[in-house]
Image 1 (cartoon, rainbow, N blue to C red):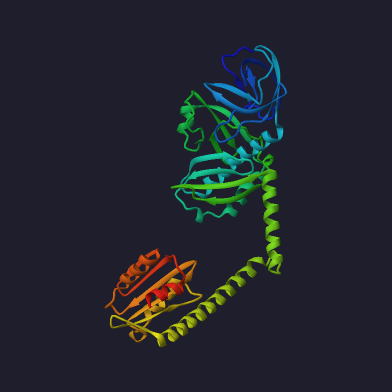
Image 2 (cartoon, helix red, strand yellow; image 1 turned 90 degrees about the vertical axis):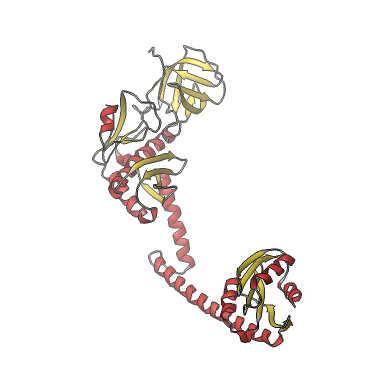
Length: 397
């Protein structure tokens, strides 16, 4: 067969995994053939794996219309020789399932989104992603609904066909989604159509019927960027493994909470409410302890520049809680109240009657011990101090 460029038959005959071909060129580890069934990386689908003349094929790319097979080592073959190619059938089948599943998933998006457009696609080792341009937020998309509808299309056993179509005619058809990215324009375009579900311009490898895809597991729905909705999913054995892993995790959680899988959600809600209630009790106790601490400190105030200063350390509370309490104190607590404690690092909270600027006290402390902060003239706080609370109190006293 004499042709000007490699005839790549992968997309037209995706079930072929064994073939013979004539060598057209050899350049180190790069080999071109008169025909090939190896899929060249493109359109979000990875290159096929396998062997050529018994040597592992590590990459397949298209360069200026030529399909170039990169081998693991330079082959001992000559131009004109006949060589045998063997495609990794397991990986090819995975790619066929994954790529066809993208059309199934896109078909779900057609039905769920008021507006939709193709935003990108990629087949990973275990997961696949499909991006939509859509005027919706991922939080409004139910992943389980997506999964149910996609699997219904699989169970229906819808036929999958591919054929050539005039490019202009295809672009004039609003139902046809173009997934070809920046591919060079041509007189005709390859169309992949799932019966009464999806129709797209696509050059990948596909199965002949949706029931060959196997299970589809929607892993996540997210917003990766403006106007984009990303659906991540797995197919076939990978989908089943995701389901097993999730079931295992749920079962372990149920065992830990001493309940059944069916009652896990209810038990989790009960524990969450219990946690909230306990946290509220703890917060109230901390506030009482804080009030008790402030009362004890009021018995040992310090006079500075004719003003009464209440200075001391506090425990088990954060700066915001302290600031809220200091802001609610009346003038009987002191003209200036300075409380310091630890919340990761040492913090300080200052409340004043207005005669002394709270920010000035913060500047004084942070100037001595580092950190930073600020606030209002009557209430300010600082953090990141390079000293323990007791040292700060000694300095202020």
